[in-house]
Length: 223
Image (cartoon, rainbow, N blue to C red):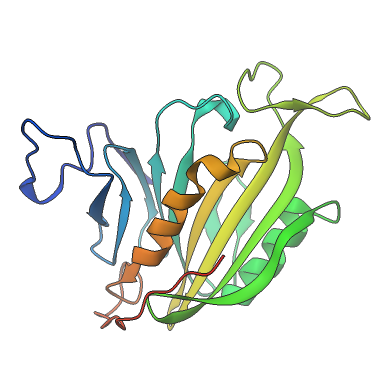
C-alpha cells in the first residue's frame, strides 16, 4: 500500500495569489491522472493506492469541532470490478459493480439500524448516470475522542453520530465512490463544498490503469 501526504496542497498549475484573497476552490488532478474535480482551496490531501485496483484520495479540511476527531473530509475512491482489496484491519472486500458496493455498504457498514436521509436515487455526475444516497447511523467512537461525538441515551456510551453522503459513478472497468463522512451536527457545514466536488467531478480514464475516457459535457448534481 502506497501512502503520500501532500501538506501544503492545491497550489495547482503554478497559480500565485499576491495581495488578494485566495479562491474558494482549486482544480485537482489525481495522482494517476484519472479524474479531476474542484475541491476547497488549501485542504490537505492523502493518497492511498493498492496497485491500480484500488485508490483513495482524501481531502482534509481545517479543524471543525462538529466533525469526528475534528476533521471534515471528502474522499474519492476507485474500485476495479472483482478486485480484492485488503482493509487496514486485515479484512478483505470485493465488489462486482457499483450496485453491489451500495448493497454491501448499507448492510455491512451501517446495518439494519440505519436511517436513510435520502434513499438511493439516480443523478448525473459528469454527464454519467450515478447513484446518490445519504445515510444516518450511529457508529462506535474512541473512548478518548473529544470532537464530533454524542452520547447514546439508551446506553450512555459515546458514539459517532455518522451522517454520510455517497455518490457512486459506474465505469466500464469499475466505479468511483465520492464520500462525505460527516456527522449529523456537522453535515450542513460542508455540504455545499461536497456538491461542488460532485458537480465538477470528471473521469479522465476508465480508472487509474484504464484507457483515456472522453467525458460528457453535462454536470448536474441534484440533492
